[in-house]
Image 1 (tube, rainbow, N blue to C red):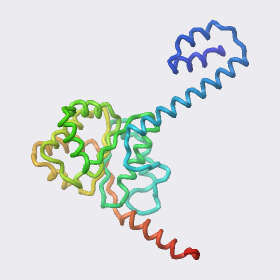
Image 2 (tube, rainbow, N blue to C red):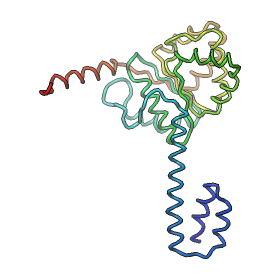
Image 3 (tube, rainbow, N blue to C red):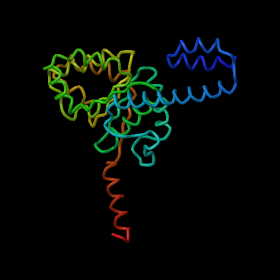
Image 4 (cartoon, rainbow, N blue to C red):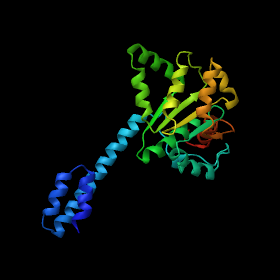
Length: 250
């Protein structure tokens, strides 16, 4: 019976031959304890490497952690709603999240903090900053790799589209957004940040039919978070200035 937990760990690590051999070995308690410590260390090591790979794959725009989010500053995001988002029920149900609000309010930071929570659940994330996406897509098209790009993103659990509408997408790239969303239907979630109110999103697309198709897939299966208030950057700058003035060494 002492072998069984170790056999399960060995199997989890892909060492099925060792797991089968362990079942035939005599049971020495000291050896079992030592082996258990070694296997725990190996599991932690592999989990750490996998976490690092997921973070590298995500290419997050900011280093953010859910516990560091400022909930004291009024901006339309209270503690209960933030905890609701961190519960990731929307993610588990393949729903989307739309973070809408003025510049500097912290939309990108909140998006990256939620991404970190998803990554900690051993799920994949990919961050795309839309104002810079046009250059990447032009390069991919020149290399004939658009289909590969779409296929790779289709396997990602959470896709972040940051700063939607800040720079209009070119007409020939706009259909790719529909392809991204179509591939994620009931299979993955999308998190969008934007300074534009949702009522103005339709006007970002040259083809009204394409706009209808994109917004139908994105908005109607999403949780909308409308942020308000002053820029967090301005707030932090004022706080920094006040600290400098109060420091007698300056």
